[in-house]
Image 1 (cartoon, rainbow, N blue to C red):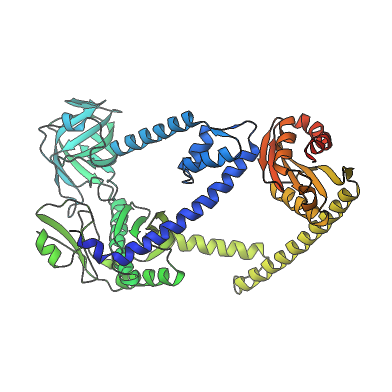
Image 2: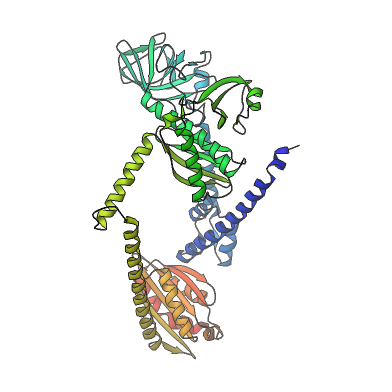
Length: 540
């Protein structure tokens, strides 16, 4: 019943494997973040905001958040979490409603009975047209005057209406003493092209005849980038395989953003191969042809259709010889040479099983090369070089020297830490056959505290170490219990919680190591002075 599943079995299996790996990474990252939230918490409830952020930003399931919270004798503010989830759904629903062809609220009713607009922008740079409708402040009107912001519908136009990932045209509409600046063009399902304008001068009336003239320099740049998207998809399919299909695109005058189905990040070699292939087609100066034809004929020619898109009986096919054939209603250059050059800016993940490439053409490449050259020259100047020759060699030498300095600094820090640990161990208090040491370490972060704890625990198995690291208005508390002290019934998690609560915080953890947060720094010294009594209560 579904032959596509069999055809794409290998691709589906790879995507499942990628999803499993991705989810595993999500769980690891989310668990680490949740541990930090618990350590910094001053109460017994994880806020709904934190739970929502874990779920929305990091993909960490709410059920896991609740389960881990319970292990620390904490709960989750589910009411706030559910409220934020609903708000997110409402925002998404509103965004979908405001997107696409019917983005203009109420347009279907307002423009009911208005004939569809004839689009002549494939071949014409300017068009004489008649005003069919004027909409101001959400209502149809017979006229509008200077400074008014209006939506204008014409019987014909050269302005392209946003669709298929290509942005709408901007430009100017004129008539005698009337000038309208067009900031965007959209279209609805009734094929009315809606020109979003502000009147610069004069008064416009329904029935007036006007000249509709898009910003052709901008349109030409958009056309270059749209044709580049077609060449990019064809190249990706040749380099990566036939499983590659368009999953979305955005084309404007500055760049092209192309999303496509693929299961892994592209290697540097693959990116170079794709980029080279696109440029070879550009440099070959191949004509770009557009034809209207029956959909069945287009399919026989091998033209690619967008998955899930609905097409009529007659479709428009854009072809670059036999290299690329696609169903497309967008605007394109008539020869690949007009793209000038193609350069990939980035390749990233857009979603599970979907990759994203951003690229530039023409003047975009020229600007990129100029900026890159400027950066190279500035780098050479920073390294006090008179020329950019052998820049990479000099940069590698500077990086190696920096690494050496960092290693020496790290060794010095380790030596100082060892000395500090030695002092703490020597000054430890003996309590019922175990030793206890405490310290407030200003400027030490959570990682630094953990390192100090590990050193003390390794050197003194009978030691209970409680360290507070102060950073700004907050403090982290770390507790380490040596293996001999563990046998006496001492529990790091319970000590961390008790000490933190004395300083307005909370936390917990495992028997041998735990972290907590303290919010009231004025009580931190008191909390540290109370450690001996707290530890004494736990010794069996």
